[in-house]
Every structure is written in structure tokens, then in C-alpha cells.
Image (cartoon, rainbow, N blue to C red; front, side, top):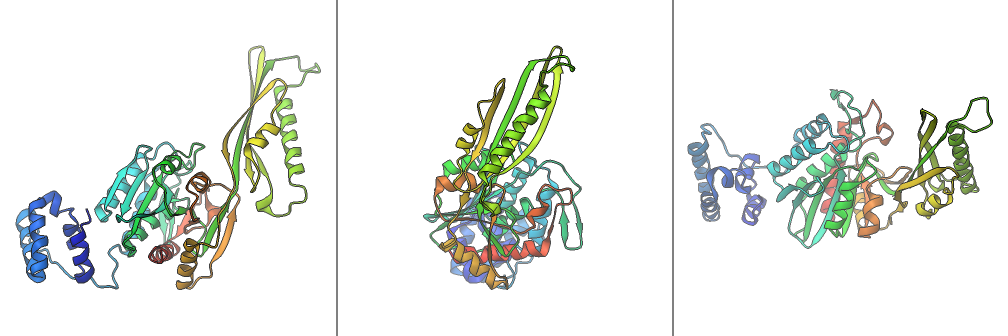
Amino acid sequence: MRNTEAQRIRGTEGFLNKTLCFLDGFVVQNVLGSWIGEQLLNKIHANYELALIELTQTLNFTIGYSNMTVQRETDTEPRITDSTAEQLLHDLVAIPSPSHSEGNAVDMLTQWMLEYGYDTAFIDAAGNAVGIIGKGSRDIVLLGHIDTFGGNPPVRREERYLYGRGSVDAKGSLAAFAVGALRANLADDVRLIVIGAVEEEARSSKGARFAATQYQPQMCVIGEPSQWDRITIGYKGRLLLEWEWRGALAHSAGQAATGAELAFAYWQRVQDYTKQTNEGEDRIFGQLDVTLQDINTGQDGAYGWARMTIGFRLPPKKDPYQIASDLQNEENATVTAHGHEVAIVADKNTRLSAAFRGAIRAQGGKPRFVHKTGTSDMNVVAPIWNCPILAYGAGDSALDHTPNEHINLDEYLNAIKVLTSALERL
């Protein structure tokens, strides 16, 4: 793990990747033993060049690196190269991780964090991948999600585009978090927490809900695609209604309504309610959206049944509990509400926002704020943490959940530069 003495030496002398890993403890502690590691660090302070020679000789003897060379790092060569960053994203996308089945991807990311120098990395009680850098008193959380929408289109690379489920939504953002956190020269008082949350695509949002109870950050960045030069500060709220009817069947020549007819009558009621709610509101972000997500009917002997799932996207100031109450009181049917999330509109005039705007401009971009009609883990944690918050990530969100999901790798690398710069401004 990272060591205070090794950090000081690294900052003034600059080891290359292999030497950094040895001094940070991956080989020194796990292969050579902690005692030898302590002796080498002591000798580094006394005589840097001699310590390098002894480190090389010791490794040759202990693990058989007969031709190993130790070189100095240059300021122009980041420890995590662009090639390493692209490989991380490819490897994450190549591991299927739909909601509730994220374990393999979580294991992979946690091990990557340990290998490349996070102070600590672990899997928390919710199943999230968590990596931490720094031991300061100011917590900054980078909250991405490691689960994906269903389906598993083939992972492939065509020139500078990576295709595959999660490349945009939202392993691209998460991989950028993992890399940018390591590249950034953080302030001494910062503790940076990178989280790959589980079940963001599910109704439960299990990972974010658990993380909300474990930390109280001063700032938070949500990992969601918005293109590299955009900053998302608003998400609509959410509500799901499950409508169900069961009843005795009647002859088709009779006057009794069928389950399908009753379902469509309720759907018409919902559409009328939505239209009335949106009267006088022209802004898309200000409107209540509704979708009939599925409808099924059938029969069991002399009894029939009908079920519907209806999804709402709520504008600011609309209470999901009030909407659910307004659409109850269905005769001979039950309406069950869940997934209540209020809309979130974050303050755009914060130190966090200013840091990202400055970082985008530094890369030649013109920053823009956007509001999205979907929801994210921002809806979960923002009301609890009550801190400066925004969402950021490369990729075109119009490709979310599609068979053609893909990300431009050059945009992904640009987003890492923006993130790194923004973190250094905090």
C-alpha cells in the first residue's frame, strides 16, 4: 500500500512504474517481506542511487528478475498511461455485469485498484467496489456504477471506438474515475473515495443507498455519460406503479369488461392525469412523463387477470407519494407504488462546478450544463449528503441500453484529463 515515506521519495526523485510498485509495498511487502522493505526505505534516505542498486540486486536474487532495469520517471509520462486506461475500460466492459450479477466485475476492479496503487481497496457489505486514496479530513466521493442494463452485445473495437454493454452507461465514467483518481496530485487534506456501485440500473439502487450511510463527503461526482464537455446538474424523479386485476370471467357476448379493457381504462386515466398536470408547461424538464412499460393478460380457469407496469419521470417539486395517492382508488384492482425518487437540481455555482468548468476549458472545450429526463444515483445520495454534487462522464447517453452502445476512446481519455484537472483544483 502507499507509504508516506515512499510518497515523499516518489515526489522528488520519480520512480518508474515497477519501482513505484515495489516501494508502495506490492512486492516489497508481499514478496520480500516487510523487514526488507523497511531497510530499503531507510537506505533511500541515506543514498538514493545506492538504494536503487540494492533494490535491483535484491529483486534479482529473490524473484529471479535477471535483466530488470530501474529507470527514473519523467513528468511527461503519467504512471497510468493512456494504454493502461483503455485496457481497464475494455476489461471492465468485457465482463458482463447486469444488475444483481456484478461480482466478477467488482472483483476485477478492486484488484486493479490494489495493483495500481490505491491506499486501500475492498468490497463493501453491499457488494460495491471501493478504492480510497489519501487520508485527509475532506472526503470527496466519485460515485460510479458497475452494473449495466441487460443484454450482452459483442465487445469489439473498431478503430477508436469500443463497443459493448456498459461502454457508455456507465463503465466509461467509472474507469475514468479509477484512472483520474490515481493521476491527480491531490491536496494533502483530501481523502478520495471511488465507488463502483451495484444495482443502479435496478429499482433498488442498493449500492448507492448503502454508500449514503457510510460517508459524509464534502463533494460528490456521479459517474454518468454527458459527453466530455458537459456537466449534468439535474435529473428527473421516478415513480413506478404496478396495476393488477383479478376477477371472474364472463361470456364474450356479455356486457362485463374484460381484464384487458379494464387495464386500458386505467391507462387512459393515467394519461388524462398526466395531460392535466402538464398544462401550461412547455419545458421538457418541467413536464411529468409517463410510459406504459408492460401489460399482460391471461386466465386461470374461470378467472382472469391483467397486470401493467407504469413508469413516471417526475419534474422538480412533484411529490411521487402524492402522485401515487392521486392514482389509487381503483375498483376491483390494486395499485402498488414503489421506486419513489424526487427530482434533483444541483446548485451550479459551487467550487466543484467551477473546478470542472475550468478543467473543461483547459482542454479546449466550452462547458455546458444539462438536465436529464432520466434518474441516477444522484437522486439517491443528494438529499442525504446535501453537498455540492454533479454528474460527469464521457459518452453519448442516447446510446444507453441500445444494441449499438459504444464510446469514442479519444473522448474517454479527454474526460480523464478533465477529471484529473478538476480534482487537482479541489
